[in-house]
Amino acid sequence: MSRRRDISAGILPFRRHGELAVLLGHPGGPFWARKDAGVWTIPKGLVHPGEELLAAALREFTEETGFAAHAPFIELSPVKQKSGKTVHGFACEAEFDPDKLVGNTFEVEWPPRSGRRKSFPEIDRVAWFGMEEARAKILAYQRPFLDELEQIVAQGG
Image (tube, rainbow, N blue to C red):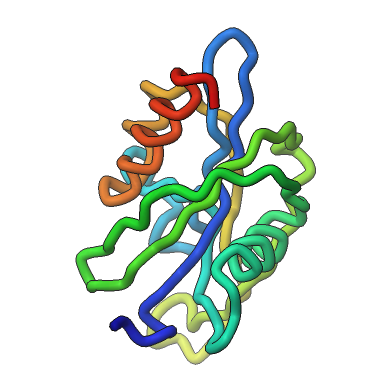
């Protein structure tokens, strides 16, 4: 059984405006600033000991985006990162305005070895993507979330 620190949970909002689209977040900070394809993610974070997976996903989603997701939720099959961490995803139909992103920040020494600390947003932007583009943008290990959501929606879910 995985330790709780090896478990994350997040929310995958989707909408249907002709085509299925999902809301993904781009990681903030200097390391990710010039990266695009294959680095976007569902807003997610660590599950605290004793915390329910959906509660953690909702908390992290709101902390990282400023948005509040609402039921009904579709529990997606968990995926694993290369590090071994398990990530649980919950999809929900929603309509969020990417221009209204307000999330939390983290602090890091920047530039490296400068002795100066700088604050960066955990997620510096969010955007809606059709499924084909989302597959190119999202972290490879999270693509199964997109595949499963697409199947569920196609079956009337």
